[in-house]
Image (cartoon, rainbow, N blue to C red; front, side):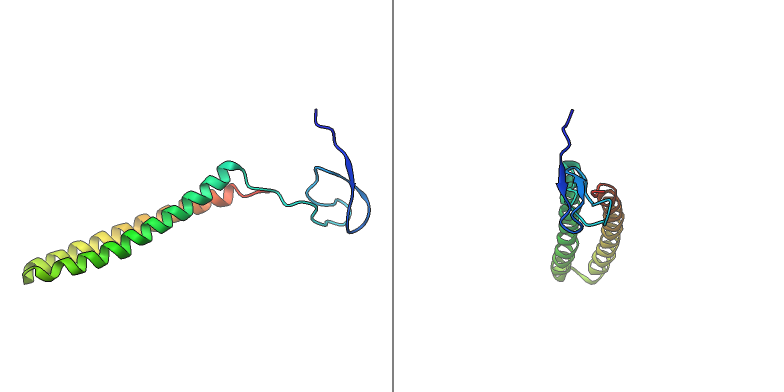
Length: 111
């Protein structure tokens, strides 16, 4: 069993448990809770996902535009339609993924 010690609250000088996050008397923050390992992993996945999707959409769209310059008129129209559909699909996946990972990040924040 973990032994609980008492510490002095820096704001109101009352005795408080060393494991408490806030002083029960005055509400002063004694220590900030930390995110768990799973929560940190979710935050990293959230940011990596967003960076990859941004690079994929902006980099791929630019490459597709450059590649169509050597095509005929009908081929350019087809390539433009295909590129538009692909960018629309990737944007949809990006938004849905960012919402899912964002909700997961909120649910794993320290309490």
